[in-house]
Image (cartoon, rainbow, N blue to C red; front, side, top):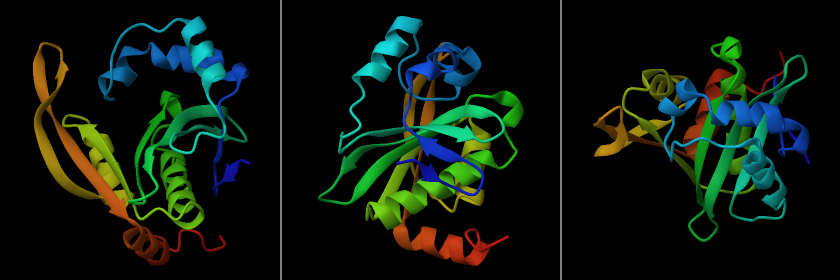
Length: 188
């Protein structure tokens, strides 16, 4: 089942995505702005990652963000889903630089929140952002309705120094208010 937004489709990763995903996984500009390990990935490891994904995995959902016109433009996820406490961690990346700032990320975020809160019945989503990624902090807290909930000091090590981790989150009620206040899902 694909998850359809107003402008994007969230779908499972496919073998045909290996070349783009491999390129993004080795792009220093992208990875400087994201958490996690930073080391070279081979196309083989990207293929192995796709082949190892289990569509029936109940705790980790990884999506490719696709548009009708441009095809695969990025990735998003809902991972570490805690079904008892009804929460999950979310991350997103728009890999195609020329499509950043065009509204695709907002549609992907609104679509994944609608899916998480209204389809899966989750209560809250969390994420974290490296302190100098001002664009993402602004995007989540201003456009996406998320709240900055804290800071973990000196969490990320980049370019020979430590940087803070900014913690952001949103609850179901906040998403519902955002969707209603903005009329996001109303017919155009």
